[in-house]
Amino acid sequence: MADVETIKEFANLGFMRLERATSDLTEEQLDWQSCREANTIRWILTHLNSEFFGFIPKIVSGNKDLESELPEDYVGNMEYSLEKIMGDLEKGKIKLMGMLDDLDNEDLDEEMEWFFGKRTKGFYLMLAVSEIVHHEGQIAAILGVEKRMKGT
Image 1 (cartoon, rainbow, N blue to C red):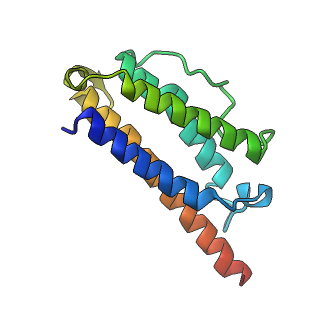
Image 2: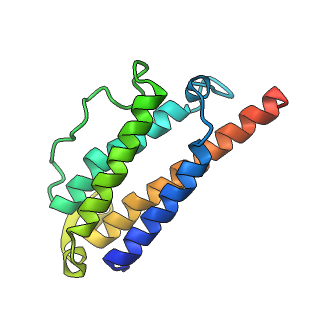
């Protein structure tokens, strides 16, 4: 499994890609959908924030029942502006990198029983950090489809 520095490098790569994908994002694009069943960028970004304030702290602490720092209705909340969501994303990035800074490679070897069975914290952290790249790809795809459908 990867060491802490590799996980940090991978997280930074994901954040760089996410920043590029969202650099020109508008309020209107937050809720644009190619069809009513599709996820919105709002949902994706608020879900990603929930990873930084809920899922990842659970992994780092080894306590899968740890309460999220975000309100229960955070993901997909229509009342949040683009500015708030992006501000929360920046706070989440700082939080994630701080949590990673506090870890030693030995911490990654600790095991926890969770939805993939008994695995190391390192496994679950890599899984969680890969969400940044996964969701950046979804956002890029949504913006590409929007552009093609609108002919812009």
